[in-house]
Length: 230
Ligand SMILES: *[C@@H]1O[C@H](CO)[C@@H](O)[C@H](O)[C@H]1NC(C)=O
Image 1 (tube, rainbow, N blue to C red):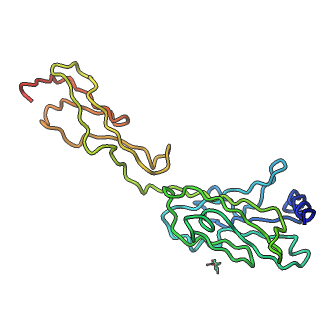
Image 2 (image 1 turned 180 degrees about the vertical axis):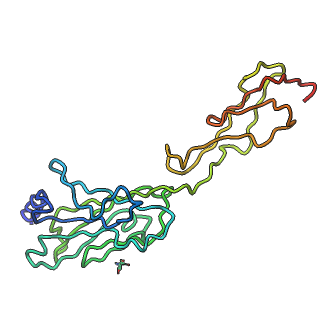
Image 3 (image 1 turned 135 degrees about the vertical axis):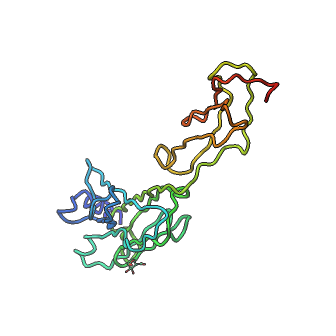
């Protein structure tokens, strides 16, 4: 048995185009899916096999993209062995369950749910080719699935009320307070970029406060603050 596993490992180092290997194809081909060229195969990098990550957009019906991936064992085909394919990982054998289903006979993997990047940004699945005794016929394969962000979260203030104070007669451009909000969309992208704005201030005119739209810092304008007036 140990010998068999060892030879399978070696066979995996043989390039896809030259024969024996457990192949993985990422079948998701929509052009929005820039990370995944059509029919991505295993890419050999140095001595390790790397599979290009599949990318699926959150918040949409993906059923038309099925199957999204497929694993295939050449060893099984060549030797005429009856093989069973299996996937494990988040979305199949770990929560959230039932996000993916697979066909054990042909190795096809389908996505069944609408994905939520804020819940699970990334799935790591392992694909297996098993013989009738349930032993791995080939070295298990990693399939990485990245969930692409859409701008489906609104910014939320970190507090219901922010209280600031400033002395009267303060100089213009005195920092009064800072308001902060967070956005659950993917960090460091436009989807999560927050811009602040003063909707109204009382008294409205002349405005005694202005705000830095990027930092949320509120400053005094050059209008002199007089506590006895407001
Ligand atoms: C995966 O999706 C394809 C296309 O809709 C379908 O033909 C196939 O039966 C599905 N396989 C599984 C295991 O659900």
